[in-house]
Image 1: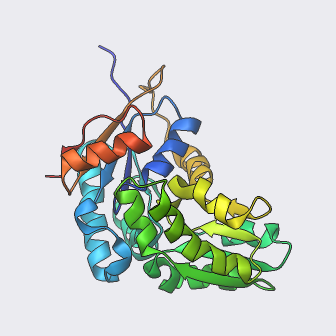
Image 2 (image 1 turned 45 degrees about the vertical axis):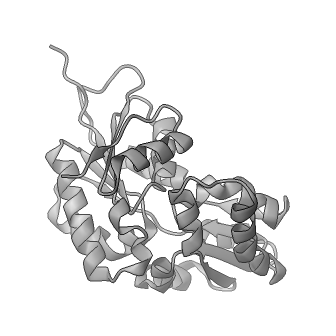
Image 3 (image 1 turned 120 degrees about the horizontal axis):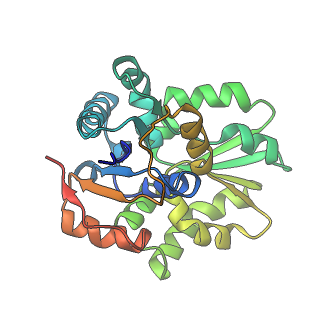
Length: 262
């Protein structure tokens, strides 16, 4: 009997982490993925660190109980609040997110970088540490965008409302001289085409999905039972599974029906 590979566990406050799952799928097509969206509590940016740590712990335990051999925290806010604690208590690799301050600082020509993120990420000590380490000589402008998270959670990626909301956040950064924008939330890659349209072709946009996938590949323990062909993805949510499934299929064409988070 051929055993299937143990899955890569991925969680986010909602559906946006599917952008990270897509980057992992592209780099590691033979790895089965197990994704949990905590949609009953999205966005995490509106909660305190203690609440986020509790949710992250519960989601990680859910994934570990289902055999996950690595955990990816596909959420900047949850990484800032909970990654260190999860790494202390879990025996498997835990890979997190962080806003791409280092590559953005290297890429900017104007010396001004804009960050689109949640309020929780912007206010975190982790983000402040990134600025201290890599932001010297660069002006970093931050723009909290909870309404853009909501757009993606509703599957609204185009249209007048989406364009108006994206423009309201992007234009001030570009007008202030930012020539490089960091997508500091995993929901935002799904709005990348609109963001680029509003920013202009000369503005560089950076997200970290591909970098997270590479870090996962580096840290992933060998598994002799790895699949020999492209593996699938399982979805779970703490919100309404029917609604989550409907939106997921707009972001991931062959997404399966989501199950409830028990």
